[in-house]
Image (cartoon, rainbow, N blue to C red; front, side, top):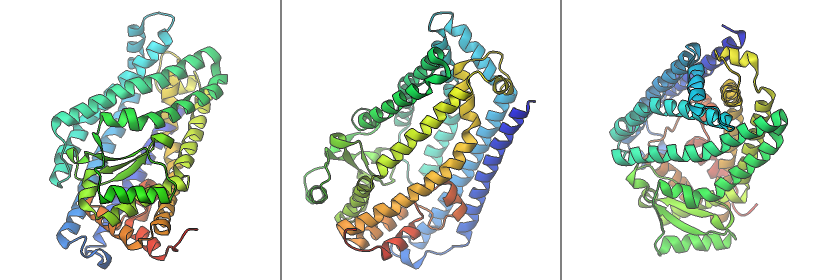
Amino acid sequence: MSSLLIVLLSLLILISLIDAAADFLNLRSIRSHPEVPKSFEGYYDPEKYLKSQDYLRARTRFDLIGNLYQLILMIGFILLGGFNEVDLFARRLSGSSSLSQVFTGLIFVGTLSLARGVSQIPFSLYSTFVIEERFGFNRTSLKTFMLDHLKGIVLGVILGGLAFSGLILFFEKFGPSAWLPLWVGLSLFQVLILFLAPVLIMPLFFKFSPLPAGPLKEAIEAYARKENFVLSGIFLSDASTRSTKTNAFFTGFGKFRRLVLFDTLIKAHSTEELLAVVAHEVGHFKRNHIFKFTALSIFMNGIMIYLFSRFLDNSPLFEAFRMEHLSIHASIVFISIFISPAMKVISVFTQKLSRRFEFEADTYSVQTYRHREALISALKRLSAENLSSLFPHPFKVLLEYSHPPVLQRIHALQIAPDGHD
């Protein structure tokens, strides 16, 4: 066994152990808080609060088993030479045409993606139709579940295939120096997807209908005008066909920007609460959070592509994965796997940034909509409706939470200054 492979397997196991430790600490944390906090009385009754803790236990145990399964699968696949067998299969199937390198790469990645997807289907089914069903969230039919997965596969083939083909073609033609034009091209492709997602991609999964005329629509439009915030429309999503969980978000940019409200959210909240949530989402745009995260993502993609260029056809890397042939497509896959532990570390910092942005958006809501208690009430109701944990362990928050724990958000809202800053 090569020293490089030992390092990789050690890192993968270490990351898994750290994640498991965070999960165990998180489970222990809820045992320290058996009663509903006074600030949540009227939102979480004792029975529902205990249900939220049972939900966390069920999801955590399920995730622990799923993560262990994926780790064993990955290690076994590497040690048994699975990547090499898939590569040989792809080479036989692609033939010897002038574009065989691209076809081989697409077959290689497509086969790996299909195998991974198939291995996850039993877990997705159990998650949706057992756990989510048991706790009253699931509204998805088996037909909708299968159609969503099929659409996801088709989108992955089209969009992922285009991006991966570009990587192979450029690296094949220009070698390591191709990383810069590739970065520019893929960045433009990423921005294009951000514009197309709300009008072409998301409607494949959800039905969007204009929010009917009434007090809520008038209030949202009045707030948007006051804040000079351009909207292409306010839409209602049929989220209740899949889950009872609630949410709202903006998607798209410029004239393509639209507000999407889950129908489940509208049923559960007052107009004032909904406006406070909308103001929070507007805050993300006004504070340039969307732009900053997009720029950060593009920057990280640049680092990834540069690393691809530095380790193309790296013999020790291919030896670690038991490969017979060097190739661009396998280089990209192996480097992605090898740097995944580093990406986990980087995600700690991006999650921290995301949590800071959530505090800023909350403050923006208070300063512009001026209904502090409405946002606090909305956050409490959202937490109760989604059975969110009120006392996550700080280590779990550090590793995985993109939003601050709700009690921290409420405390910050209570001391947030009024008026525009």
